[in-house]
Length: 472
Image (cartoon, rainbow, N blue to C red; front, side, top):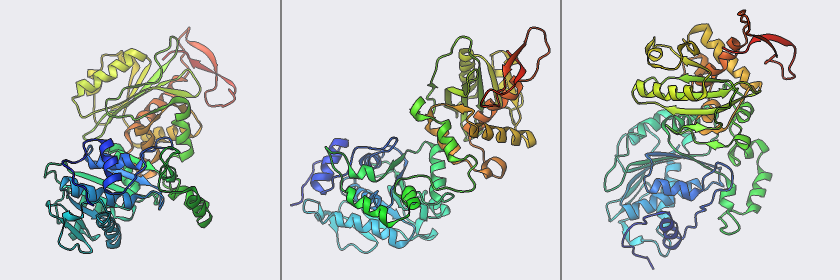
């Protein structure tokens, strides 16, 4: 018999029980792998409209993404009165999610009495004014309605211009916030999902990842998937396909600026921890150490970009990133004051991008001017600084925590971003500027009293001795 609720679920515990009792859905709510989300957390965040856009990146088949999205559509329509559009890479993919939503109402306790008239292949209407509409994968189709919620399934199969057109659809109303979900397996190295993850990093959209392990569940709360089914699939597909589409490893591509294994080594979560790198989240891995030397690289915000400040301890090998700040979209004096705070705390050298800024930033900085080095990133110098930074990463010259924002920017950075028509990532520029100072730090200074001998910074085994400055 259908159950009647006096109000929608108010929190995650109520929502999870509501899904189990009324809709017969037990959705895994525990993450298993490091940095993964649970499928339930992804659904709950979208249902409550806590963020305007979210991304679901799940295993092929074993992720249960289409079923989860169809279930989300059903409960949003039934409890919130939401008007929802569903877009897939094809009409049949859109229909599939719509069919899941419609089938949810067939469960014995589901509010089937809410359905108005006879659902069609593409639309289900409810008596509370809600509707679920499956869209064709065309510009005309996505530019029509203005729902409260937009649900895009298998986003990697949808052209990016269609995605951009569809994003104009959602509008807040009917007592709820507009919300969009992009859901997909990440299959193509230079496809739509790669671009969406880049935009998520830039715009602070949450990215929820889960694989088959989350859907197997835990001993206390088993999921819907069995290990037997996983082992069977391993025998059916290639090892590479299983790694990319089921274990969620990144698809490989030739255009990557930095090899993935070196990005993983640089952002060393096991030894230095994990941080989100959210706006104005000041990350301190190590407080200043007496006698240590530091360099801070800064890329300033331009229009919609971020100001990034990355501080490295340079008297150790490899260099260790000890502080990180992402800020921006606020007055210049406030951002420069943030930099002054970092420099007065750690001291050392500051290298910042002065491209197009002239003397504006230098005039505002109160830290000792002789230790602040403006660099104009143009032409051959820009190319050289970027290339040397990549070489430094791939020679294990720098290490630090996995700061998710910077990690993603380096991971998805392409040659086109650095040397072509693209835009170099902000955290890449800041790191490259910091690394560029190592050449200047090891120039011979002929002033008396400043010459010492030190082993070569370029040789893993220490190499031959060379004359260097002990101070900058």
